[in-house]
Every structure is written in structure tokens, then in C-alpha cells.
Image (cartoon, rainbow, N blue to C red; front, top):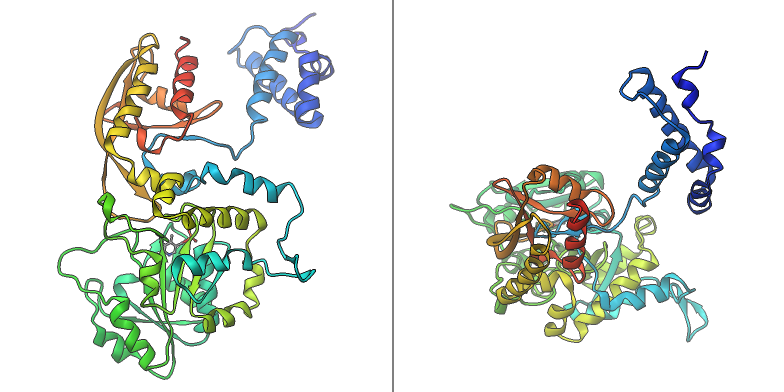
Length: 460
Ligand SMILES: *Cc1c(COP(=O)(O)O)cnc(C)c1O
């Protein structure tokens, strides 16, 4: 007696299909075979629960090919950020400048001078490649680079405040991105947190009274991802530095954001630069992939005597940066050397932060024009605001231009979901049941890619 299950093909028959063989060559035969098994299983379950009435070799081959294509995509891959959040930690924070592509490639696909001194024909320093640039750009006596800013702060405290007290204002005991909490960082290096002041007010005298023979350092934390407003007072580094030095203590600033150029002329105030902060701190730590616009890294700049001590810390070996990071960081810093104007033009994070309204409107017009050619799509340009993100500029809303779409074919949520799937996912916004693309965070080629993707989704 024949049964519907006889229609299920054997794995080997599916494997013999030329298109499947090609997939196997490209992505791995064991991987392809497993997906074929899953596809056959899926069909079998469909026959059992009668959600399907028939199957065939051709159907399983087609289904397998589609499943292989999806499963074979790299997990970590690029997306189009139309959310308007410039430093979106979940989307990889800063986008590197395209002008540094060659420098990264040169180091990635060749042997390099990573720890080799060409003149001396001997071992060189991995950290030296960016030291001079960082000194030059920030006015620091010395610099050191580690894996990220969390590591930088940990390393600094482990070196200067291990087994001693770290004085910090209660208004600055921040949590950043869930895993970085100032109190826990201090205890993790066996330091003891000595909190001073209150959540909204801390005075210089609070610090002064807290200093004792157990004190190892004073830590200032840039409250980068929130703002306390109203009846507030905090003590600036400029006031604290004298107190710290009077007691022979280092003043450490966890700055986080790492802004290298003044942006006042673009109407962006309130965010201190690294150089300005360093004038009144012994050490400043900041991220490479926030407002600096480089790769993920933790950068420490400041007094040579302290950096020398940090260099001797065994932890440094565990937190060291790799050559791709250093290549990207050196190349990014070299853009800053060409001047502020160049930096704002060539570094995507700064460009997105300072882009003028006219340019946003002009690019929104380009996107609208492409989208209007798609059948059944209603397109509008509306005003809105973008966020800087990444724990910087809390509360700052940048006026932006949004392209908004609507279609009777599918719902806004379905459309948003489909944009997030497939090749070149697009991360868009939904506001008042409308799908919106924020022009600010789009990079070269994104406008065309969004239009192309919508064409595919809407079968135009
Ligand atoms: C972002 C931030 C950190 C953490 O930096 P990572 O580079 O993400 O490790 C620490 N402190 C402050 C103040 C920050 O803004």
C-alpha cells in the first residue's frame, strides 16, 4: 500500500541535485546536509498534521535551497541604520571613515610593524603606533590604548587605587549600557568606593572631608547618558585638581565620549573635549568608538608617571588591543591631524552630528524621488529629531528630516519586519503607525539600497 510519506525524498536524492551540490561546495557539505534533513523533517511533520497534502523531490530541493541561503548568511553583517541614532551601540556604534579603508586592509592582509622596530631591527611597542598622535592631538604627556573604555577605567583604577579608597560623587555613580557600573568597577579591582555628596549636589568640601590616608584617587565620571537638572551642583575638574594635588592624589576622569574637536560653531555645546578635560585631570579615559568615530578601544591619556605605572600592570596583557583596531585608530587619528574641518567632513560620526539641514533635505528629496517610483507607495517628507546615542549628549535632540512611507499592500509593522529581514536589513523607525527613515544616519549607497529593497518587498 502506498502512503503519502512515500513522496518524501531520500536525503541522497536531494544532495544529488546540481544546485544543492553547488551550495555544498560553497558553504560546506555537512552544513547543507543538515539543512536538507531539517527540510525533509518539516515536510514530514506537515504531512502528519495534514497542514500539507503532498510533497516532492522538487519541493524539498527548492525549500532546502531557500533555507540554505538564509542560514548561510553571516550572522555579523552590515545593516542600514535609518533609526537616526548616530552611536547605536547595538548597531556597532561608530561607522569608520571610508578614507581609512586602505590602511586597515594593508595591516590586515600583510605582516606588519605591530611590535617591530624597523630602524633598530628589534622588538617595538604595539602601543607606540598611536602614542605620538594622541599626545599631539590632546596635549597629553603619554597615552595608552586598551580594548574598550571599561577596560581602560578598570586598568587605571587597578594600577592607582587597588586596595585603597576611590572618592567619587554620588551624582556620578553611573551605569552605562548595563554592564558598566562605576561602583562595581571600583570593587572589581579591590578598591573601596568612598561616595561623597548627594545625588543632586556635591561640593568641593565633600571631597575635602573624605580624603584620608586610605585614599588612592579621586574619580570624576562624565555623566554622559543622563542629566540631573534643577537644584544641582557638581565640582568640576578645574576645582578638584588643586585639592587632589595638595594631597598628592591623582585625579582620574572617565570621560566616555572622547570628543576631539570643538563643535560650538555647529551649535553643539555642553560636551567637553578630551584636550579641555585633560587640562584639569591627571588621566582621562574615553572610548574609541563614540564621538572619536574610530574603532572600539579604550584610550588613556595623561601624566607620564601614571601611564608608566599602568604599563607595568599585568592586566594590560589581558586587555591589549589587536592590530586591526590599532590600524583603524591610527588612521582615524591621522584624519584629525589634518584639522578640525577635515575631521568633521571625513569622520562619519562627526559628519552626521553636524550635517546641515539643507543637505538633509536634499538627500531626503533623493530618497523620496526613488520611492515615489514604486507602485502603491505613498511617500512624504516630515520633520523629526535624531539622537546622538551611545551615552552621549543626553536629552539633545537634533532636528532632522524623515522620509515616511505607507502602502495599502501590507501593514506598517509587517513592512518594518520585512525591511529588517533578508539581504541588507534596514533598521527603520515606526512613529504614529508610520514607517520612517531618518536621513541623518544613512551613508553612501544607503538611499539606493533602501529603494531597491522596498521594490523587492513590494514586488514592484
Ligand atoms: C561609554 C562609557 C563607558 C564605557 O565605555 P566602553 O568603550 O563601552 O567600554 C564608560 N564610562 C563612560 C562615562 C562612558 O560614557
